[in-house]
Image 1: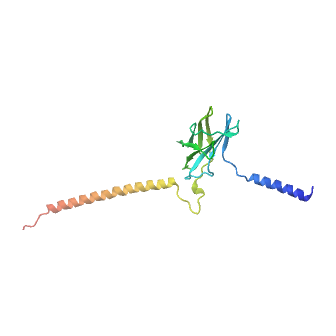
Image 2 (image 1 turned 90 degrees about the vertical axis):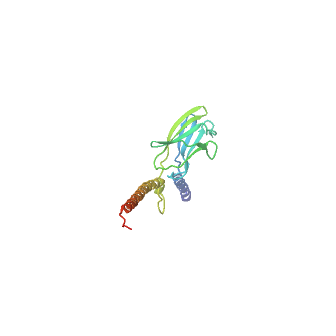
Image 3 (image 1 turned 135 degrees about the vertical axis):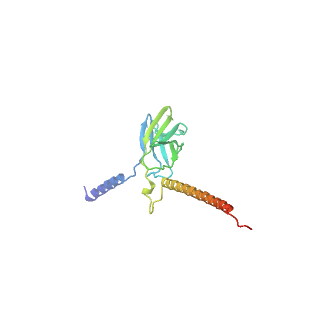
Length: 195
């Protein structure tokens, strides 16, 4: 083999290997359910707390290799985080056979999604673990903004301090009014010089 041909073949193989190894990977999970392939994951990744996102679902009929449209009323999505559950509306996606359930994840961690309902004549009830939601402050630059939950905690603390200040203020008003009343009574009982 000539050196230039060997160099060309080696270069092409190396470039192909490098481009395949750095190709973006989908973090969506695919699962075969009867004759249908379900693909589910976050619409926008990485998924960040406090940012609008959606659970993405596509349903492909493997018999025809076509996406299955019109399932909005047949399927429901239930999101689970710890002991909390949320049932967002499962609406149409960008193309027929793709569905989105909009939400704003508020806590970092792992969320699960259960897709249930009917596809064609097949009853489905599948649970998927979605990719981890990252705290938005982990990637904020140059400064980190407070999270909505820390702002809520600050507001609650301020409310309780304002409530205490309100109680102390009204206590001062009452004590002042009692003092004026005692002073007025004492003034009225004071003996008057004869006129």
